[in-house]
Length: 363
Ligand SMILES: C[S@@+](CC[C@H](N)C(=O)[O-])C[C@H]1O[C@@H](n2cnc3c(N)ncnc32)[C@H](O)[C@@H]1O
Image 1 (tube, rainbow, N blue to C red):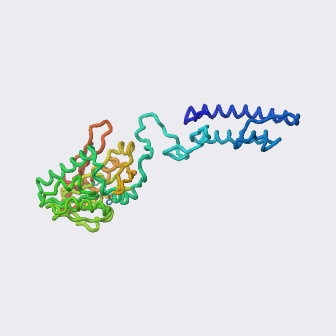
Image 2: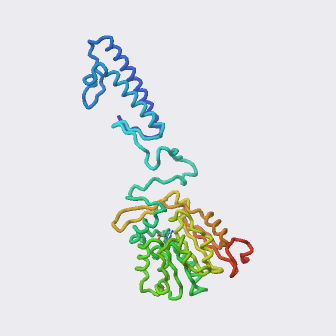
Image 3: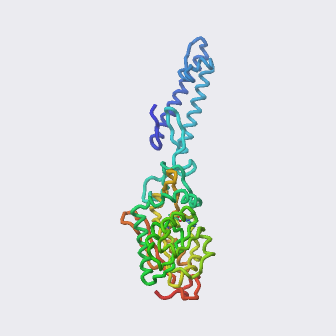
């Protein structure tokens, strides 16, 4: 018998089997009753267990056993079908659907919200990390991280570099706070030859820090580089308030279980300083949630990233007293890859960051 698949095919198969089962049951019952009344008649039931006729094993009870078996199989098939599980009939196999548990509602496969559907687990990876284990994920892939820099990622970095470069033009000794700086290959190394700019780098993955140091050791920027191997959510205690001309969160929030505390970040920004947040377009993240990487040993692994809504970023920044200066999407495709948002700290020196209009300078 050919395998039945999900949906309509499964309904048809289940119904056919059910009908066949009922027919077989009726037949068995008829045979049973005839053998009951005519003990001498050699009624052979054709059901087979391990190659032996049922009659040889169960004797006069073979008809009962066949009936019970058919009822059990019918119940199993109906049960599996109702739970939306795939049924195969040759050999019989009732399995679990890939990519969701049986308790979850079936996927809607049509309609405008299709891009919101959770993507199936990637098949080519040996391990999927949750964002709560991002430190381990980045530690595992650090040596190969920069190999995954796609055209889209490079375009995102270039937007960030452009803003840093503009700031540097008017303020050569700008203080940059690079939160979740990674290998530094994307942004920090662009300024490797700059002996004026000050770079404070934070990342909780020592392996990432190792990569950064390999990239910059001996370069002018290295002289003005301060490194904190620390969590973004903790490091603010060790940093100067109102000090940084640019605070960078470049493609970092989607690797965090929750966004960082924007109010605390705002307190680190100098008056008229900037907060730059870039991240993956959330629609893109819904469609492609797995950020894949290769470990030092060559194994493929993935991080299940978190969608970061630009409107949420906007609201958090505004609540922290920051003003939106620029926001744009990056990538020409119908589904853009990422976005960048630049917020200005238009706070009078001495003002606080309560998000009150009275603390904002006119734009
Ligand atoms: C996708 S990478 C981006 C690296 C870099 N900003 C870039 O654009 O190339 C995210 C980085 O953020 C770091 N990271 C994520 N969550 C962090 C946290 N809570 N504290 C410190 N670093 C974090 C990771 O270790 C990783 O190096």
